[in-house]
Amino acid sequence: MLKHRYNYCVTQQNLHFEIIKKRFPSIDLTDIKSLAGNDHFVYVVNGEVTFRFPKIPKEINKNRSEFLKQFSKLSPIPIPNIEIIKDEATNTYYEVNKFLPGISFYPSVAGSFTSEELSNIAQELGKFLSSVHSFSIEEARHLKIDEMNPKDFWEYMEQNENAYPKFKRVIFPHISETEKKWVEKVFADFIALVKENPFQTKVIHSDMWTYHIIVDLDNHKLSGVIDFGVRIADPARDFKAFEYYGSNFVKDVYKSYSLPIDNNFEKRRLFYTAHDEIFELTRAVESGDKEKIQKQKVSLSKYVSEHKS
Image 1 (tube, rainbow, N blue to C red):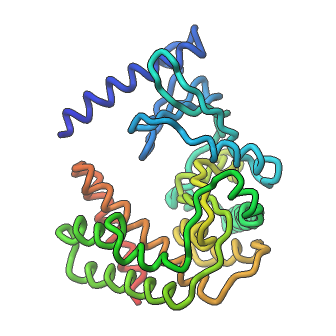
Image 2 (image 1 turned 60 degrees about the vertical axis):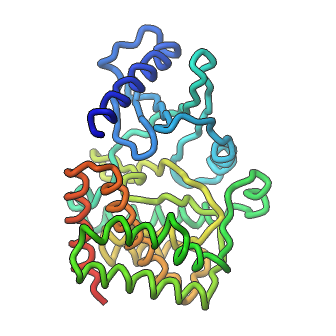
């Protein structure tokens, strides 16, 4: 399985390099840096331009690109403007955007920042999310942005094969009884909460995870945010990554967030963080990569031990 995946990746990479060379004819392969991506093959050329190729080749929806063109005029921080291109010779769709310099704001990176630097970044992110969540829902619908129904979201989480039933089936053979009970409670509490209290939706980034927040290591400042999922959904979902930077960071984000927050916002925020820990382990198990599985098992165990109710 892994050998087959390796051969597939090498074949795809060769195709991608040929496509990149069409745009940069004199490029040397040493000037192309490959980055890790869950759903895309990602390359940075000359430290200036980012190429993203879907791992499952397909036509790329232009809705997100159109949203970013409009929102980039409103965003208080840098975000990528995406150009969608089709290579006619190979029928390959890909995205191109200006490279946003910096590194992902992993918790290990945040550990080298001072309290003041973290507070400044938190406040900028609060203002950023205020701007995203203020984007007109009517305009987003005009752009055909995907929209969830908060009234039946509990049912999706409880019954859909891509949600809780899948997570249980895939990861329960790999985790302890204590962790199983914790996962069960996390989903049971959330499902009961949103079933009884449907939330108000906003236009959201939809994939605000630690590796999509980019910082400059030289001056310890926020460089921008990348990889928008873009959806009309629960705004609490966009706060999920902040749990990894500490309670003061979360408080500072809230302080600079200018939109109203409902009584259950914090509970939903914590669910989405837990959900993604569970999701990442699920994805690792499905990949069959033993190193990734072990890494995510350790991550989930650590999270559970720090968030026992």
